[in-house]
Length: 222
Image: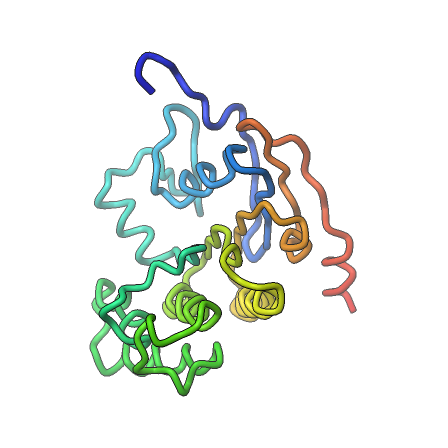
C-alpha cells in the first residue's frame, strides 16, 4: 500500500486431508479470508506453494486456474452473490453452463439440488422474492450442484439469525459429508468452528494454534 509493505500471511504451513472439514478461525484482519482466496486460486502468493491433488496452483496461469476452479471448487459467500435478475434455478445452473453441461441436464441438476436444500417451491423466484436464509440456500445449491471436490465457505452465516445459522451449517456440513467433499469454512464465530474436524486459529497472518475437535470426532464415531 503506497510505499508500505503489508504482510497478509506469513509462514503458513498446513495440510488438509481429502473429505476433511476444517475451519479458519480469526478476527477481522487475521488473514483468514486471504488464506482462503490463496487456496482457492483467487489470489497468487508472492512466495510459497499451494498444492491441491498434486497440482501447483501458484504456477498456473489465469486460464488454467479458472478451469481448475470450474471443475473442482464450489463457493458459499456471506453476501450470497446471487444475480438479482435470475431465478433460483438460473442462478444454480449458471456455473454448469461454463462446464458445457447441456441445458436439459443442468436444469434437472439445478432443480434436484434446490429440492435437496428445501427450495423445491422457490425454483422460479428471484433473490428479491426470498428471505436471507432462502438466498443462502440457493447459494449453497449453486456451490454443490456440480459435486465439486472442495467447497469454500467464507463467513457463510454472517448475515443470518441464530436459528437459520444452525440450519445452514447443518446443511453445508451434511452435504459435504454425504458427498465425500473437502469443506473449508472461514469464520470469526467460535460456535461455527464446532462443526469442523480441525480448527486453525489465525492471528496477524500466522497460524497461532491448531485444535482437533474431539466433539466432532466423537459425534461421527457414534
